[in-house]
Length: 80
Image (cartoon, rainbow, N blue to C red; front, side):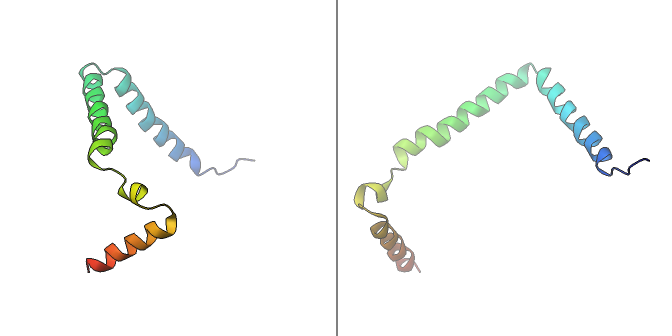
């Protein structure tokens, strides 16, 4: 008795797409350097710049969550 497995064609398509990307990344030469530059730039943007230019003001000014929530409510209502 044969079963009608409808997922089998999708698995083949997904597998071939995955194989294409895996082979592409494996055979990269210049692309590896470009990906490293992208990763380094993202790290700089999200990690280092956040530390220096976006301090956590609520953490330093308010002691508990209720005070922080009240401050956010006041700021949202003030800007309307």
